[in-house]
Image (tube, rainbow, N blue to C red; front, side, top):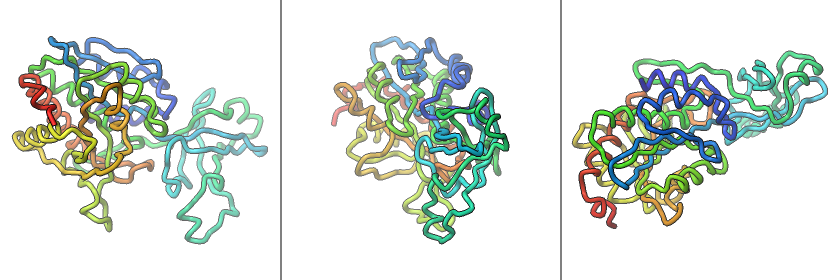
Length: 346
């Protein structure tokens, strides 16, 4: 199910700030494992499975992806644009895109002929040297596209060798897939807490969705899922995560030590490979807005190893995603049968 979900999800638009462009997809997959579904006032997708006690657990990943916003229709019909979120601009030239105007319009990203050609400027390629060519005349463009419309790299997800998937937007659609894997696994396990699955909007930028959804849910504990830089050729192995190496567990003062210890014990008991990711400062994820919400929420941050982050060819391992979901489900089931006060005691 996880692989099928990702293949469909990564082919649908969820530009940050415009996550309701495909409102039917997440309910289709999550409602079989949920009792309720709603969108909060910022638009985050929140599913819940009612438990038998007053305790609640939130699983959270951000639903949005990087994209572009049209900022100007130029006199010749070409389009100026700005990234929505941080894109690796070195990877943008010569990409084909789809613009979501009055209808879907295909285009290509091209560079101005007078773009500086020296190595320094190529590495620091600026979006004001780039434009989108739709092949349409100015009058045709104005009928279909206006400033404020959004666009995405035109890329269908596909499988590389084995269980390796390449897609646009795996950051953080892979994290949402972890939640689905956990929901599926929890169907087989006893648990008494109410489980919330929060697919938060607008992480790529202000991080507002995770903050608002957590305030609404007010969970007792939370699991945050995002991606971490995966190792590729010529990169330092000791600073990168290994695809297929299992979940990357953030270790640092911001992450609850009792939850960290418990997750490690679950992985070791069930033979799930894991990696440790020292995080002495801010993680740059929704975990920050979760743990400081209201009177504080104990949180565990788990990252999925991902190569080529913030490009159109983000690459991850489906088995890693499935194993994280399995480990989280078993941890929830076990702690529901234990003394939470002991788990959460510093």
